[in-house]
Structures are given as C-alpha cells and as structure tokens.
Length: 115
Length: 115
Image (cartoon, rainbow over all chains, first blue to last red; front, side):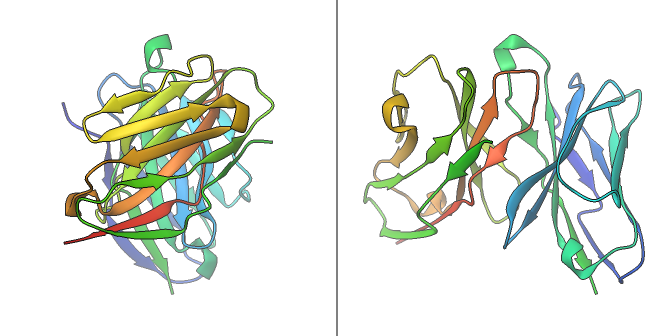
C-alpha cells in the first residue's frame, strides 16, 4: 500500500514568489492535513481538507491556501513568499472512521527554502 | 487551548540504556487522544501509538512502552535497551475528541543513541 506522496521534495524560491506543493494521500483516505515545521515554532497545523472542503484552519495568514480535488489529492499554495516561510511542509492523510480516529499518516515533506 | 510540553529538548544515551521521554499535556476536553510520532532524518513522521483519554491502561510494544497518567496529565514514552536506530526526534501530540483532525504537537525531543 503506497504511502503519502509529496512533491516536490525540495525547492528553492526567492522572496515575493509563490509556490504550490502537492500531496497524494493513501488510497481511500479522504482527510488531508498540512503542517509546517520550523526549528523555532515546531510543527504547526495549517489546514485540513475533507471531501474537497476545508474543515479546519490554523493561525496562518491568508497567503497560505489550499484545496482538495475529487480524488482526495491536495495542494497548498503560498503566495508572496517571505524568508520566514522556509520550512518543511508535511502532508498527512487519515482514514475517516471511528477505529482510526485521529491517526495521521505523514509524507516525507516538501522542504522549501526562501532566499 | 490545547498544549503539549516536551521539556527534554535533547537526550543522549549509550546503546542498551533505557530512556524515558516525557510528555505533559493540557486540554479542557474530557475526550481526547494522545499520540507519539517518530521523525527520522528522512523527515517523515512515523506513527508509534495512539491512546484514548478514557483508557489509562499502559501499553508495551517490544522495546517500547507508554505510561499514561491522567492525574498528572502525562503520557511518557520509554525505550528499553535503546539501539542506534532509535536515534530520531520524537513528538508527543494531542487531539480533541471531535471530528477535528488537528494535532497539537510538542516541540519534540531529539534522542541520540551512541554506540
């Protein structure tokens, strides 16, 4: 069973640019969450999508956005990049069921460097 | 608001030593879920265990064991006879009991097991 796949794994951008990251969840998983990981702030929740709808959102500015497609694949976009956006962006998928409540399966992440 | 505290930033042990990673949490919810994840250098967060708030039974899985105590809001993780392959960052996380799939993570503990 394939795991969560994130692309690209590494990317370098300059301030002011925008970036789109992609996440393919485990087959059958309909919930996709995004987290930002930085040395200073640790792991912080960005947002969660389920059936193409954003269900939850963290405390990030509007420059951070996302969407989910009918096949559950998700993308997140960061516009007008700032140096502080340099981070590892982790995607996680989850099977929506009582037995698997809250168990997230993570991808290896997309490491973004903003110069 | 939910909060997870991992007071130990870094721990270094010699192979075969036992090591305990501490986790203290705060939540107002009566139903919640606690997790431990392992993050090796590759970046992917690997799920280790989930514990429900209404189940205080301790659990052992091979060399891993978890001690959940609601009275002290702690969910500690012990590795017995540590091995070099156990070297990683370990995260404790908390999720409330609703359909919200947001995890609140601690800052993580970097465990280094030296040969």
